[in-house]
Length: 239
Image (cartoon, rainbow, N blue to C red; front, side):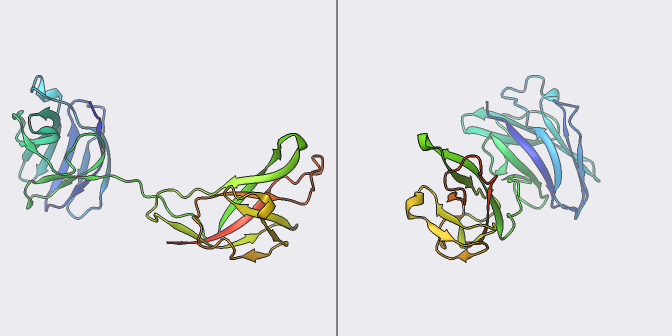
């Protein structure tokens, strides 16, 4: 049975709306006044396929004033596996399928709009992550190349999902006080680019910013005199 979690409540009505979980009463009820922004919630939508003990297996949405109430649950019937609702406090077979993303499973925003049909809908809840700084600092840690024990450095730049599907490199800066030999991905150090201290390059422009990096530092294979790390500054844009 997929778990559907309500993570936010959005109130588009002119009334105060309260959401409560009558199955897990330890969940904190959420009240949203007219005009307030989306408000955090943390409730699982209860399963109630047959209405058994329904008063303890439903979400309650109350409207104040004028004192109206709805119930929300999820169930699989002949029309599919959906989140459902009904006016009042009693179970309904099969119940009205909620608007929007009504399928069960996943994190949702519950939207209440008294002027819509249906009055309830669901939207996917996506955690909005702020973009990384620009330029982004990438630290390459020391590693070793097989039996020769030649030191090289490797690291990875990973952009979280913040709304840019294709972050692209525009420029790369050697932030170190020593020269390095640098390459992107698994291109190999034999064909890498030499960069002097604090030198920048557009040689990697256009590559996906979600990339691994490899570099040689100044130690020339000396394990005892290795540098602790190599630091790059990667400039990027949303492609």
